[in-house]
Image (cartoon, rainbow, N blue to C red; front, top):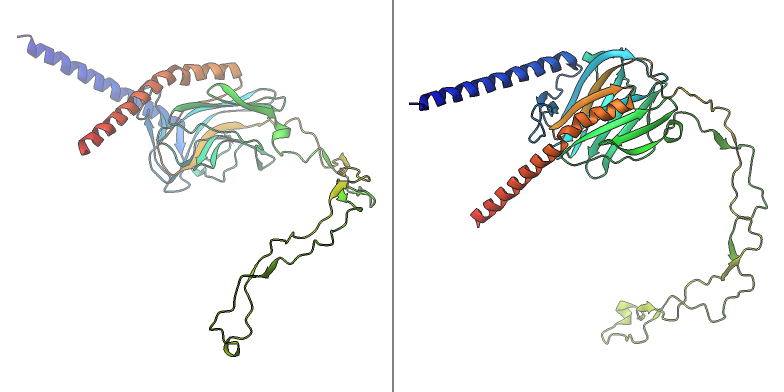
Length: 376
C-alpha cells in the first residue's frame, strides 16, 4: 500500500533536484554571459563552455570557463570598473586546470586597458600584463610574466617553471609600487625580484667606455711556450709507413699494373706534432677588463610598475588539445585579500578534487587490468 507513495516521493525529489540544477546552471550561464564577451575578430574562434570538468572538489564551486574544441584560438574578455595601481599593489590571480593532459597550449591571462574593443580583441591587441602558464612539448613549461612599457612588451629574463599535471593550480602575480614583484603558485612564492633587474625596460646603467682600449703591451696570456724546451732529434717520424709484412702478389704484372707499392700502415713511432711545454708567463697581467662608464641614455623611472587605466581581463590563447578550465579570477590591490580568496576557492576544494582524481585514476587502472585479463 505504501509503495506508490514512495515512488511519488522519489519522483518529486528527482524533479526538484533537476529543477534546482537547471535553475542554477541557467543562472550561472546568464551571469557568465553578461560578464564575459567573446571576440568576433575571427569567425573560427574556439567555443567556451561552463564546466567543473571530469573531477572536482565541488560541482558548483569548481565550475569555470573551459575550452571545448581542439586546435583553436580562443578569445574572451571581461570588463570591470577602470582603475590605476599608482601607489598601490596590483594583484592578478586565477586558477588553471589542464585536466586534458595538455600537450601544447596557453593557460595565461592578459590584463588590458579599459579602452579595449572587446569585440575586436585578438593576439596583437595591446595589453598591460600577460601572466600565467604556457606549455608546449617538453621544452616549454614556463610561467609568462610580460609587461608592456612604453608600447613595447618585455619578457622576464628568468625562467619560471609552471605546473604541468592535471590538477587545478592557483597562479598569483603581485606588483609592488617599490618596483618589485612576486610570483606565487598555489599560494607559495616561486620567484621575486626587481622590475629593473629582471626585465630590460631601461637601457643599462653602465656601458663600456668607448674611449678605452686595451694597451698594446697588455699581456693576457697565462701560459707561454718554454723557451728552454727543444724538440728531440728523433721526434720527427712519418705518420704512415709501408707495411713491412706486405708482399707483392705473384700475379702482379708491372707492365699492366704499374710499379707495385706496399700498402701504408700507421707508424707506431709517430708522435705527432711537437709542441714545447707550457710555463707560467712572468709578464701575465690577467684578463683585461673593459672599463665602464655611466650610460648617458639611462634615465631612472620609478613608475615602471604603474598602469593608469586597467579595465579588462581576457583570455587570448591557442590550444592544440582543449579541456583547460579557468576560474577564480581576481584583480585586487590587497595581497592579503588575494591570499584569503585563494584559500576560500582553490584551497577549499583542492583536497577533495585530488581524492576524486585519485579514485578516478584507480578505477581507470583497474578497468585496464580487467580488460587485459579478459583479453588473455
